[in-house]
Image (cartoon, rainbow, N blue to C red; front, side, top):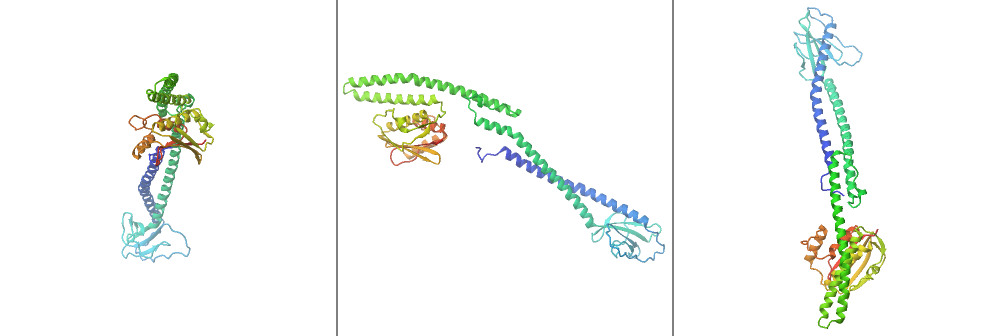
Length: 432
């Protein structure tokens, strides 16, 4: 499982794509507001000018003396998009007006350009009558209608831009997901890759960028496989080669012990104990490398594992000797070394307590030996958590290291709880 604290390529791309889309939509909306707004203003002004010219040509020629009574709108209600007035230049009075035009003249003088009324409610244009220079035509459009047209155009354009950005974001997100799928598949294949099993090698990369990664994984796997094979062959051979001489040494020491004078017996006893310990270590290594650290689970009992083994004067008390599921060779190797550790630290009795909890099996080894100071115990815990098995880690000897490796091979863990007396090791692994 990936560390949630690390940045995700997928999340970073999705966030970048979202922000880029929002920024692009904002910039597009701003351009639409400026460009389309300007074009709409020009089109509406042009329409107003053309309408004024048409109305000017359709109105009858007014008398030159200019005393004309202002027209009255009809009774029919209809919608006017433009209004017009004929204004007396001298008095500034509206002589004739359209249906919805105000009674007061919107402008009392002639201007030769488009302008806004004094109250900013109208956009208007004025045109002189050549035959009646004392009067002029005023045509106006309500600015609310102009703003409505402007807002509608901006709104629709912005919605289309936003929709296009959303569709583009979804399509790009889908494409990103497709392009990252080969990387996810490669990651899953690497999880199950075993350099000693060529059939688990990741399949041919479907993207050119993944080919160097796959090639590097292949080469690294080959080097690891060769190293593991060499180390297994050497260790297995060494264990086999040493087991017979060690057994011969033990036999010779047993004969010498019977024939030796009393003064030499303590030294011979110590020598035989050392040879016995060396024999157990060889057995553990042989069992461990014969299985290759791949657990071959069987249903076994602790008493069956320990029955053929000899631990001299160490008393082993098995509690709850129920059947358990584990690799007998690996578990025997771990127990041999842990019990040997207990003997070397002046233990006289070891309790093996088997328990099960929530699908896990726990085997506790608690001896009555010299124990371990809290500072030293904490140092051992930290080294095991880091899997630091080097000479500077504080892990001296094979016992704890081998037991930790066996538990990790079973998918479990080894813990070192604090106890009041002696030393305690908890072996935890899944029950199935």
